[in-house]
Image 1 (tube, rainbow, N blue to C red):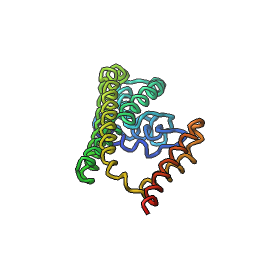
Image 2: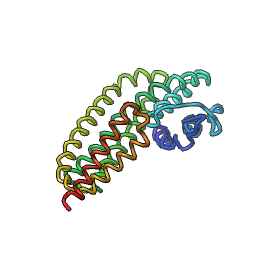
Image 3: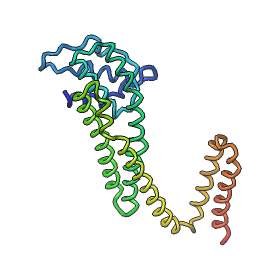
Image 4: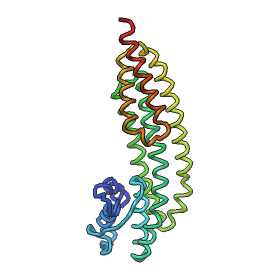
Amino acid sequence: MRLRLTLRSLLIQAAWNPTDLLGTGLAWGLGGGRATAEGAEPDPTVDVGTRWHFNSHPYLASVAMGALEAMRRAGATSDERDRFRVALRGPLGAMGDALVWAGGLPAALLLGGTVWILGASPVGAVILFLALFNGLHLGLRWWGTGVGLRHGRAVALAFQRANLGGWAERARGAAVVLAGVVTGVLSVVAVQWLDRPLLWIAAGGILVLAGQRKGMALSGLLPAAFALALVVLGFGLTLLFGGS
């Protein structure tokens, strides 16, 4: 059951839509996930056609899948499971965003970039990133279904004991440190390119276009953004034509 739910969680976003969000995928994952060896009949309230509104972080939605299945086995009514499903949406979404999007993904990406800048092959850096990120989300899915199946409606306490917030803080801290490392290394490397006028011209042009497209959102910073862009562009033109 745990393996089946975990594998089904990989497709929970396949039926994502603006109305139900992850709800259709969650209903599909539970409706087809019955352990027939235990003699359990499929739940008539959760079949492939069930439409729920459910939003969560996709990698932690497996917690809800496991907990709802455990509640069904324990005899919880459909209304009880509906209320519990609604209550899980906020915590799972907020914690997943903090742990994955704000911490794990940037840290994995920056670590891959760091080893590449320091001399690793591009293929090796990509493999490192994929191994780290896929290990993170597959591990979260497997852990989520397990903790949900074990604890059912008490999964909130187990979720709290796991201290995912602490892990999210560590991941964000690692991302910040790696961002500093990458910035420092790139600054040293950039010194070697100071006499390349075409790069400065390209950078200035990009800044001008970016300022034109996004500058209105910066309101008062718009003049400063264009000034910086023109300085960079002017420096590149000086390098290109100044020596001729």
